[in-house]
Length: 477
Image (cartoon, rainbow, N blue to C red; front, side, top):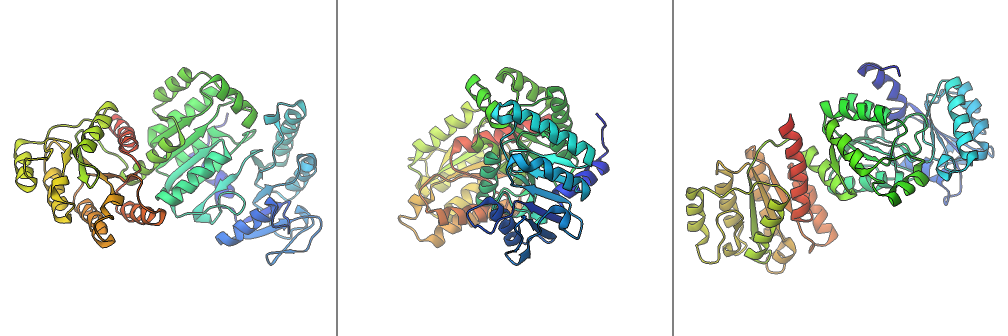
């Protein structure tokens, strides 16, 4: 394999993530079809380049001329999205070569993932034609490119969020879609994402190498089902993890899952133990489900790194009293977080603030005796942050209960206190926000805290797992 320099990698992938023109082959005026959705998604997102719908029937689509063929387009085409049946794909490839297209993305499925000989042979034909024609293939059987900066949405009529530092490499289009949607809801901001499906040409190795070189990506997430070249993948993961956090969810860990991976994207997979050992040796962070991957991407984006040791747990914001704080500390300690006792001086000052009766002051700290008053929370957080044993504060906020006896403005004041502390000192603050709010209220709180680099998680357990992943990466540097 020829290794490319960073400059060469960025140049080669520019037509994929920053194309100046996109053609949709199989565009349709029928709103029920994906050929309509791809064009509408690009138009609605505000893609600044040229959009060329292609269909032999011609006509107009959303004010754009529909060209009868790729070669009928008068200007250059960088990126082609293919949504036509697989049987007519070979004829299209000659047009791609004639048009000097840079990259061809096959949304079209029905190739090796079917297990049929015909599907494998067609993939071999695609590769041969691409090599002859001088273009690269993404897919087949995938959603392809997502790039908020370029105004390229994820999928037909899909989601587009705010651009940020997170890169995503996903073998599955559906998993990629879930992560992009979670990003919009929870404030995970992607620089780029790619779903590569069967990966017959460009695959996980190529996209990991690109994300590692991309200056606009500072943390990389990956969903993988398997690989056709384990040695290359290990090398790419090791190189990426050397320069940026790499968080990997490897699916197909069981025999049933491996069989599903083969039928989904045609991937070869190894045992769970082999993958775990490889990920550890490569320096990647292994996660085990969608939520843990999203949580880790969120905390790495907002905190970057945390080399501290001591975590203070603060509960009692109308969350059911001391029992909740005690159970939260059990969860965090069992997962490996260090929950050190507060200094005698800090405990004494907290005792003067909250009183001894009914209060837990060692760590966790239960402030339920403060009656939900913002001023009590403010002083308690100040004292805890000033303790030299504490490097991070994890706050459990049950805002749904608070709203039962105080107005929304006072609930917001609680979060304003956390934001004020976060902006004035270096110790991170993380929050767990259990169910109880309306969707609108929850999104409003998450957005506000996220903008202040305070990660929000739905449970203490998920918050603790994300903190541990951040700590493990940061402390190996």
